[in-house]
Length: 285
Image 1 (cartoon, rainbow, N blue to C red):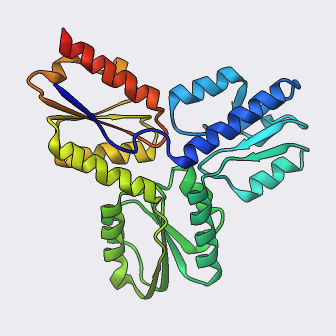
Image 2: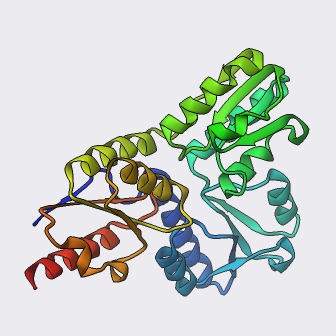
């Protein structure tokens, strides 16, 4: 069996930066007996979250749980600026790990709102990144659209401004934008999809087309990993989304000659390596 790993698999720049900043903060402040908090996961990967917990990161749900004089990590997906200001007032030091691409989308959301456009965010309204982008805009003049089917009941507006969740599937965004064309007299579109995400999607699609089986590695709550799985499955029904090698079943590989592996932006390279090694072991038995 031939096993091929997609190029660009492993951490993207934004995720790597977030983890490095968090590790540095934990090392610096734990030695001083200062607690380090975050609201929600820094990145969407269970293994990495567990690792950071073991290093001393305390994940909470509410601002009230953060102790005065501590350190707070703003996760890679971004947060409400009002919440961050509220945390600062407690005498808490802020460490900002927000992905630069997410910051760009937040900035575009603010700009479009200030110019009076009805803002459309293409993405998942329950995802922390999209929630953070909504906080930079006029909440009374925006709509989040996840799929083309949602456009049917979308009312007409004189002016529509569009941004995208940075991990959006390119084809889905194009389909929604096309559907919005007849919903306004003027439309401003800002392509805020991360270029690394877009390239990874293209590479994964090509590998899935050439493989007998496709394995996508990464958190099930990771938007970019889930999108990779959907893209791969569309052209290769024999696609499996797993979080780690322990989920792999030997029966998947009967008669398989080419196995393709790709990982999300929040998937460590070591996780992908373990998947490859486990499949090689199966192949030898």
